[in-house]
Length: 417
View 1 (cartoon, helix red, strand yellow):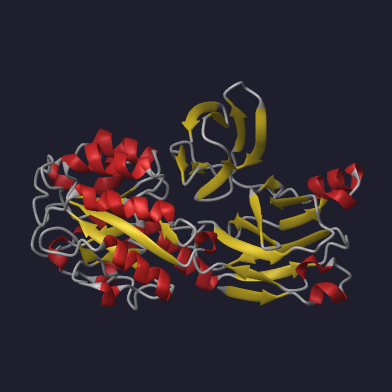
View 2 (cartoon, rainbow, N blue to C red; view 1 turned 90 degrees about the horizontal axis):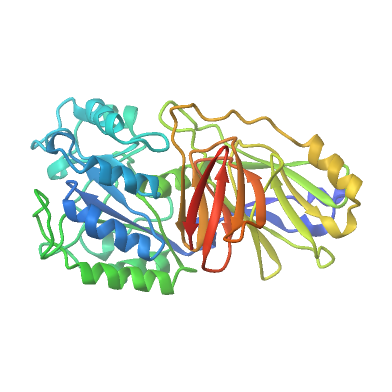
């Protein structure tokens, strides 16, 4: 957890809501540990069995494809549309990748449309190629020679992002998913799993060390029951979160209004591979007299929760001013003035840049729609929320189970929680 003291707010005459600190969570949602599930070789069972299993529990995984093995591109595109990561596993699965770092990335991107394209890599046969070429094209590369609980990573990930360890699963590996996730929770760390095919499923070339799918389902059931403690997310998402968390700073702004606290969340690590705009989880201590609260970033309303007198929400680095408002004390004119004066123009994504709407973790998520308007309706057509997409992935609505209609720009999607 990263804390930034804002006691200076009191000197500026700002409400004591910020008398403690602004904290960046070590893991999304202030969970205690993180886990990523990765799948190699693009097996048919990844589309027919793995994707639906993870969707059932509201989780997303990483699928590493071999370009020349002609995987089910349509099936994997549908999985990307549903929030899963599609990543590279080389062109040919040769013993050692030779000059394939950029070409396999381009091969995946020619077939699969997703936020940022293909930005993580898994090495065939566990052999690390040219690290400089890897890190020139990807935010991280994954090895596969980590065995047992001793290889659960710490909160800052691997020592070398070109060699991110994973625990092999299946008949030749470890099926102790739950034990390793428990270790990650206990140590405040991150564990990554590597699976090929499943026992008694259609696996194509992914026949190495098959895994019982029932073991994986038991792991996801455990994760769902312990969701407050373990964050399950793709390799890409966790790597981005760690790098952003460690690079971000918070700057308090003097807005001159005792019922509004403003600050900026920024970093300088965006590059040609990634903008690094994955949302970070923040929390601030709430003052007792703040009973009607609104959280905005760049004038887009953010979802928030209250827990132990903390205001907890996700915000995107470099995406604009963050405001926490005490609505109970603000007049409508003050709110309108504040709202209009804090609007920041965000560039809309390129026309050929896809966006996706899907359910994850009991929430409606929007990905790849930066700058676009988002409106959520219930099944009867009643508007529940209007906001604007800010970053790589954004939680736009959380609510009870049911069907929701989500309008992004001029397109409408149906999402079932």
